[in-house]
Amino acid sequence: MRLHRNLVFTVIDSLEDIFNEKEYADKVVQKALKKDARWGARDRKFVAETIYEIVRWKRLYNEIAGTKDHYSRENLWKVFAVWAVLRGIDLPDWKYFEGTPVRRIKGKFDELQDNRAVSQSIPDWMDALCVKELGEKKWTKELKAQNIPASAILRTNTLRGTKKQLQDLLAKDDILTKPIKGYTQALELNERKNVFKTAAFQSGLFEMQDASSQLVAEFLEVEPGMRVVDTCAGAGGKTLHIAALMENKGSIIATDIYGGKLVELKKRAKRAGAFNITTKKIESTKTIKKLYNTADRVLIDAPCSGIGVLKRNPDSKWKLQPEFIDNIKDIQKDILERYSKIVKVGGKVVYATCSILPSENQEQVARFLGLNQNFKLIKDKKILASESGYDGFYMALLERIE
Picture 1: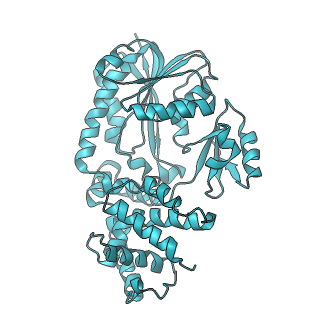
Picture 2: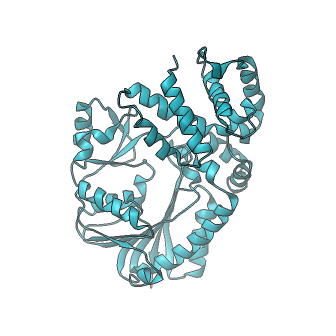
Picture 3: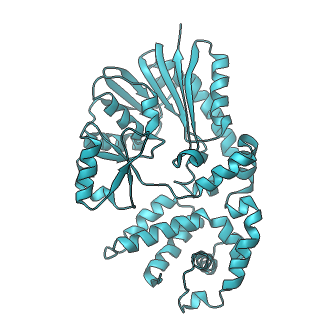
């Protein structure tokens, strides 16, 4: 591979924004890809994948480069050089790479393989927490899986067409996909491409949604004609899936504390042809109380640590702090306690997270059931990236009984 100066400079600029300005990697990548309209698919792929890879392996590269977790412009070039050397890329004769110790980089990489937190590029506190909750063997396997970049997965919008129709339409744009066994409406891209400029997207035939995430709405066991409340709807990925499963019959109330996300949901719903959705911003506890005892189904896609989706959001492991985990568990307890009251007697609730920590999942559900004898657990599902190949998730189906 030959390195091109303008592409590499874009990567360095982007890393500076992520590491020093604390911007989110996905937003930085979006900005970077708009830098030069003349770039082809290969150029765009290099920029996006290189940024994410260096973010993913930040700690390992930092240790090898000896940059002491200080990301000056000079040190970013050193980190980039480590990335290139470890991938067998010949460094060009640029001043930024003068004196790069190629042999020492390779030797240091080998030396660090016995230290899991460094070799797998994870903060020490997170490594220790996950060992405590999952056990060393399971966490070691899971961590390796979380360091494999996420696949690009589409969910067919059955309000607009079938999975076969979507597959055929994308193929006309030279975007090849394959179905995934066990996932009803999922298609996996053979290679990453910009699917958002296709006629299929503009027509609302699909949403980008990880395979594991697609299981949550199905877990809720909705039926056409029901009244459903999606309590932490965000921009509505699961809300739209619920609408499709309900065939646009019945009603969905999508709530969130962030009004901006609900505005985005409305735009997505229009494109998807989902017209049974009403959005409601949570202004206070009264917003939720007014919904008590009104729904056949309630989805609580609770805020969480996101440790199950590190493969998709590698920068989140550098932003997370131990105190956030403690705080989010308290929020989960409160949300589950209050939002579960929205469901009618005989109705069902799904509590879901994109975390793999039992303390955010099974333990939260067990605690809730211990305090609320009028609910029972129907079933739950634990998804690990090391077993599924997709995001880590947890979901529990609860029923409100007399």
